Image 1 (cartoon, rainbow, N blue to C red):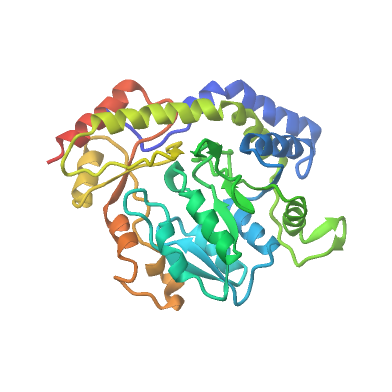
Image 2 (image 1 turned 60 degrees about the horizontal axis):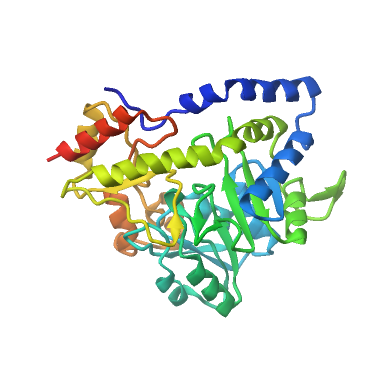
Length: 365
């Protein structure tokens, strides 16, 4: 049996008519930037997230970067980020001239460990950027309490967690702002790059929109030294077609994850841990194994696609060698990077495919 790590075909087949109609609407209208499709999606996504405002942007990295920029964080400032995440989180900080300060994750959840945040706070710290990694919410009560105590902004990185909840409340609605990615592989994915910043602050939303439109609040009037990052009409239309199915998609992923959690029983494998405060959406189902290279080869040879999230931790990436870190400086992030292996997780996986993955993982010796 051949099982890809991910495929979009089941969802695209289910939405074939809606996606084609979305294209036809935009093509017929001949309006491709800042139009009715963008406005419609922004309103619907803000409502879905439980926030007052949504600003469509070009991608998830820009969604974070523009939020930080709108909060007037920049040169000489520091932003706390998890040491275990995709590099876009740190790059958003770098792009505004600030310095990312890495904090280790909880080895059980892979998310930032709130008990390790305060020791990294300095007089230059301006914000904390928790990442709801793999679709599982961070411990937001603890993070918000620390931020309030030290007068810090909170910008949530929700790129992998559309629809995840913390104590019954949707992520993205806790901090001053939140950034979402709609990269095609996300639980809510466009048919290309796209992103959005959500917030409950009207002035912040206006500023993010202006910053993403060359710093312009109206045509040819530039208040800020901005960027070019806008959600185009075609991607907004595709996202509007997909948004009504997001809960169905997430529930399907939870069902697959529950089968994995109940069915995988191998002493070589460490399964994901789910705290009782979160209902994850399982963008990634990441297991851990000390013999990851062997497991990866075994599964691939068995026709099962896999991925590694992420094989080189951020502090050891060449682009961040200027920060002066070395191997051993963030041992928990390094442990996750060396042992994590993601197994197939996508909407529409057949029961027999899920069972095949479970059987093969259990047979690994």
